[in-house]
Length: 71
Image 1: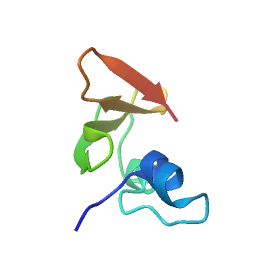
Image 2: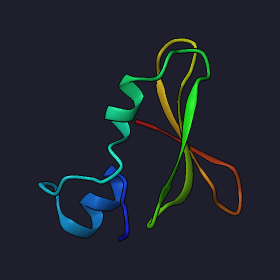
Image 3: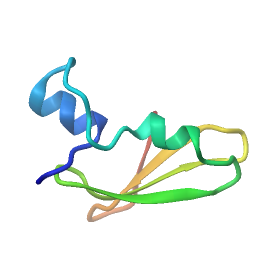
Image 4: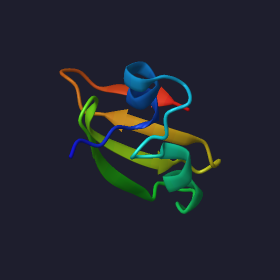
């Protein structure tokens, strides 16, 4: 079964749909300073969710060129 992140779930199924890969829930368990987790979204592809040293949650998405999204 396909799994989708917050961004793809909203885009495909609307704002009220619950994501399979809840980025902010995953981020709650990550320690600041570079700890992270790889996830595979059927819409985005391979992504890396992590917190920087100041606690900002970032998502690195595998694309043709390096791109980073801040949540």
